[in-house]
Amino acid sequence: MIKEQLFNKLKTKGIFWSYSKNLTYEKAGDKLFLEYLLKYGDFDDLILAFKLYNQNYIKTIWEDKLKDDKRFIKLNLMLARVFFGMNVESSYFKEVKSARFEKFRMFASSNQIKRRNKMSINKELEVRSGNKCELCGSSDELSEFQVAPRDDLIVVCSKCREQLEDSDKIDESHWHCLNDSMWSEVDGVKVVAYRVLNALNNQDLLDILYLEDDILEWAKDGIKDSNAQPVRDANGNLLEDGDSVTIIKDLVVKGAGFTAKQGTTVKKIQMVQDDPTHIQGRVNGTKIFILTKFLKKL
Image (cartoon, rainbow, N blue to C red):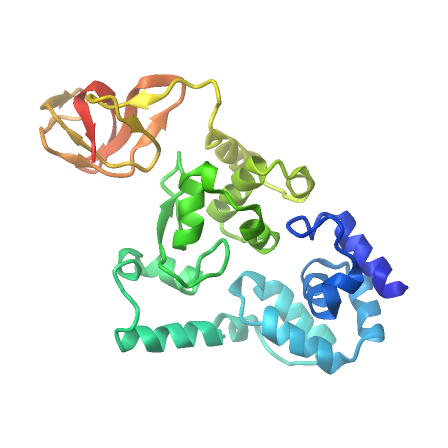
């Protein structure tokens, strides 16, 4: 009875939103229940759980599901010290490598996995992400993803990227990963989580996802307005944030002291709010506004 009450308390918070609405404690099972209780349960509920379950059993689940995840360093430190009696520092968890990552590394070194996507990620992002998708934790086909309209980058896998770039392909069951990543310390990850939850109309998780005012404004800036006019290049091709284009005519950039030459490629363009005739992009290291009629999508 007590276990069911703890489970229902988590369910009321919307923690199991990506599972069936009819999910019960019996159907979820102890492992799934304890995994989410460790991640999101109140402190008093954790104390109660350790009275209901064997400590070694809980520790096994913790080691399998949480300990290797760098997104939960602070939580893992508390669990290790308070509940498992481990005298460790936070640096212990920063150095932890998952078995999955080690396997990936070995395969890569023997050329059994294509490396082109990994090589596109800068070293700082590799270290921060632990060579895993910062949204779902996958190690498959990683690449950089710009969280427009800012220049911030996060690491995503091919499956997350495909759904982020095409809303028609969104698979709600895939995004249960946001139960974890929405609490990331990386603002860009939280912004993407907000946008996906908004697309899924998941108000329960949106209500508990806390964003500072400027981060919330950033998140909302990236949500497409259904009434917004489409932005198109000189040939009528639809342009979107993150696209690459080429300039089809020499353009004098007033105030910048240079000419944007014909044939120049502009990567990771950004839309201009309420103006379908311009885009923003970097040319010669300077962010400028460019008329879309002088651009061709690549």
